[in-house]
Image (cartoon, rainbow, N blue to C red; front, side, top):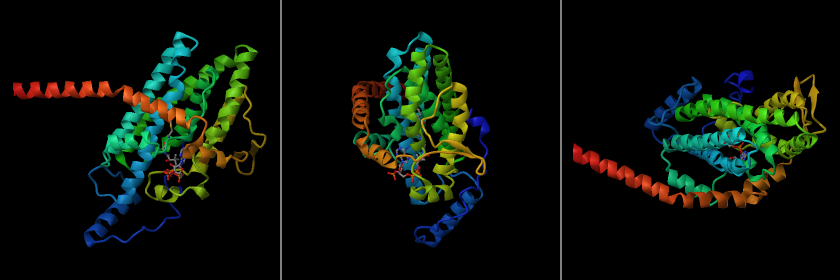
Length: 340
Ligand code: BYC
């Protein structure tokens, strides 16, 4: 759906270029920096063994690890509904989707590891509450319609944000995102299809869908991050070709793509200010509650504590699996050594 209507040139956002934060210390470093800048300017890829400025490395570790954590914590609201899915078909689809999200988290942790950070450190940051993950997963999933709406709107927003990351300047992240986006596209479609079925059902089912849309719509708009003017990382992220399209532009694309889908579905998006603006060629929309967003991002959303506690428990409960896997790998190595 979104993937097919996406075409924005790479050079957007590169016009206002921030200058380098600090002067390179040595001539050698200056040459390496110049080489790096030239490759970024030519839209080339940076690979793990290439020289890169420390700030570029740090930004990538921050963004990729936050993204990985989002996938892993993102398994929880839907994981809760696997045992309550209304049919075998819906259960099988939901299990596959949650598994895919676990897989995305693992690709992304691996991509971050290529930058010299360890998985233990990243997990420790998540489990201690130091690391961020997407705000959207700190809201409750209250009924079955939420599963459809998470697929349609949450995965829909995620795809909108992630398609441009397939062209990210860091090779391992960009390559991981290609597969992630293909799977997210399936996630979005299965959510939309589940909602179409509910909307053809009883009035009670239609009411459930509308109620879920009312609760998730504004949270999904906030997923794209703060407005460009308040986004501390955007200018540099775009200069480095990590981000390709700004938070506000992606949000607008999401609104424009979603309004016709809501019409087909037969639901109302809960925004009295939502209307087509002929002059802009886009939908206008109302004000997002950024105070609420920051409360949630900073650990005070309705589900932050519960999500983190569930995640830590899952990690602790899985300790024996990690130990068994290590013991097995050790045995295999010993056997191979003896045989050699
Ligand atoms: N939630 O300067 P900004 C999914 C933070 S999950 C929490 O704009 P940046 C899925 C931001 O981190 C989708 N925090 O930052 C899984 C920064 O904080 P720090 C996850 C947010 O990095 C299961 C500060 O606000 N997708 O697909 O340039 C089921 C300032 O922001 C949020 C990704 O992670 C937020 N919504 O841009 C279903 C995509 N927004 O680090 C679906 C990869 C902002 O200074 N990430 N913050 O403490 C990105 O594209 C970018 O990192 C963002 C933010 C657009 C999210």
